[in-house]
Image (cartoon, rainbow, N blue to C red):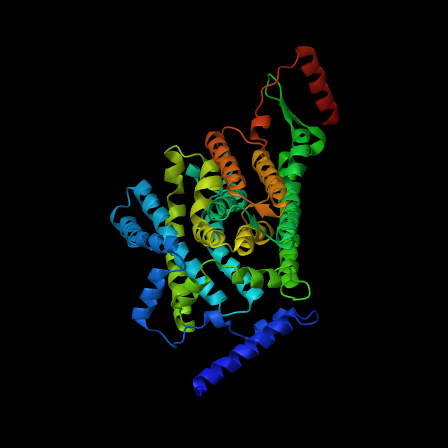
Length: 498
């Protein structure tokens, strides 16, 4: 005769099964079930409250073996804090410790986000998990814009070693998208292909994700294209006597002001688009993820091992989130504080923003996606690559523009043409690889190779004070030779106007 607890478990299983079937109903939305707070069965820990021994045991085991090894880097967190106060004259050492310490901190934040997501319905949990993975990026962007220093009146805009952090933020926005699409997705295809010859994924996720990225890239490209098309119209011609004439009173300041307004309004529109994307996926009749994720989890090659892992309680999940957020924020502040010294030591602005910062702030997300691809859960892994890219383009990047607007700092979406072209080409390349609905290790290796080539090019890309495609300083300072007769006629015309 079964025990009462077994009967309760069976009844609970039947209720979960009934709710799942209801969720597949075309007229039933996931959002109400999310608000009711239903807990997924695999997210239950069987405990309540906070138990220190269990908390540290669960934290150590993490979500997979790679994340477990990452936890051995945790001593760099206190080392960075100690170095910040004991060795303040060694900025590169502080940067190195904080950079390495960011990896286990982001790993804990990502793991706590996973534990929290498992206590929610499938789609809501996946969206929340992706959001927690992007918290590090949001904090980084906000810290960077707060620390940005505007040049004094009459001074030219400098590099990162002079407090000009806006080019680094712009590079980090695009670098985050490239890192997810090329490096993370490439490693997912490569690692998954080593265990399985080919992995098939659902077209709904790949096509929807790639379409949204193209729309987002279009929105990010508009300010840069606008600027590049019109910056030649503000050219200041300087004669041999130093007399300057500005064409049609369309000054560089006017163009900069227009670009800033376009960027601010575009950011609001992109954030609205991100809200539509979230709402779209919170409805089961429109969700492109619910059935796919449900089926994918049943094909997880490590499903039994994952089910046997210990879980956080709700209280322990909250504690882990708070601890990881505090350490992550502190380490990011230390990183940003040392950027001037890092750039001064010879690391280019664009390499720092496009490669170094996205690598560390996306570490947890990448580890999760690669582990899922290795386990055969390729659709979930694909979403962990495309989802953060969509959030960066539609929300995180525009958000920092809005924050800069509030702080009265000229953060805009006028990216370097070189960078924005890389992103558009990256989206097109990934879209071609996703078109056939399957992946292998060769496609993954090719994506990683493309990323390495971009990293090499970004190392040699000049700093803003040397050359830039989204500034007019170099154009304005050109020395043009004018014939004396022509100059005399010009001066006479000016006197008549005066």
